[in-house]
Image (cartoon, rainbow, N blue to C red; front, side, top):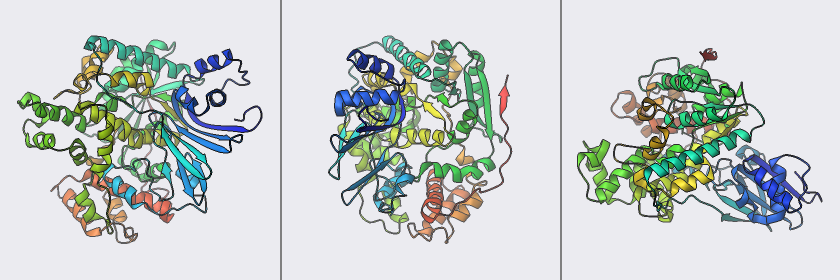
Length: 565
């Protein structure tokens, strides 16, 4: 979109949720608008406020502004990193795009693999920003802007999450405020849509609470979608709980069942959606495909885990806090009561060290795996810089804040964006509303995660809407049962991708990979995440670097849409 004089151009990917309020403010100062789009509002805000305009925007966005008046460009990424921005600098020339595949078309682009990015990918299962897998590109981190001027790029942080935990508030007051803010965020994301809207529904607390708040604001039944599996997997029962929530709120509910062969057959498409190697969650690909047949906008519960605490590292953080405070009874140790040496050791270590131990490959194993390991910053040191900047010494809040700045944008929101956009589906996340994130950041870590209890304050808030069975059941989420498939269904694929020919790139030492495979298949050790990380890298390298385009990996099975009464 161009300014009236044609000398300022703005490109926007995403949605600005507060554009109506900002439009009214600009109109009051005399601005005349010719469209009803949020892009024109963003452009007008830049003309009025300059580079600080980005601080007035709330939503999910990647923005580029070319200002001919000043002979400069500006890039901006939303506060939490829902939308991506990549850029490349070379010989005084700067290129930028929202996808790496666009930069790869530039003949001057350096497409060699960045060894530091590969090093950290093996630990985190994603390439952490500001790195990219290619030497020639960098990611603009969440909550940052970049000014491109005179052939150089100046990057500035304009916002970051701050988990101070300093609120003086009762749990009941906190629960009420969480609902009030989440309700406002949910309704705003519904009202910002000029097309029909649906919801992801796993049957867990996060998506169920969003559906509950959508239902109270909608004049028609909310359309909800869940993912199931054609083969029974003991630890995957999401669809059963989702049906109960759908019945409770009278939604128009649909399910998508996938088989292992369907998942394997579609893996090349999934890998191509990322542009970079990615070994995190990929199951939303199939659910997004199902939803996109019905609508083009959907709400999800993404962000609640990172905001309120759910993962193993959040649970361990609460126990580490207890140990450091001298509390070591079985109740204080929670799930580690039978192996207290784990939290005891962690309590003596820097937080970034024990946190990294819960990730994928550790540094020692990476040295064994990589043909040219070189000298790299340890992945624990990479995380340590974020812990040093964390707001306070509350280890639960510090760990949540670090995850909000690393895991959330680099992995969680990466798969949300790439896998939904692969089906032209826009996903909006009420839990990541700026006002809600900033409020929850003021709550002490003890309100969120305690030994044996996660998302404590969110569960208290949710009991006003959801049955106890939904709130108290173990977390599952939209995660594929890779552990149940890796030994048998994926064996032909792993044998192929870990063959001598497939490993001819020389990045990895094959004997260690074969050892991991053997130990996993013989149930000597569980190497699910390590093998999945290597498998996904191999598929990515084969398609993006080598250019071998597999259209399928096995015959797909028909999985028709199933409507549940």
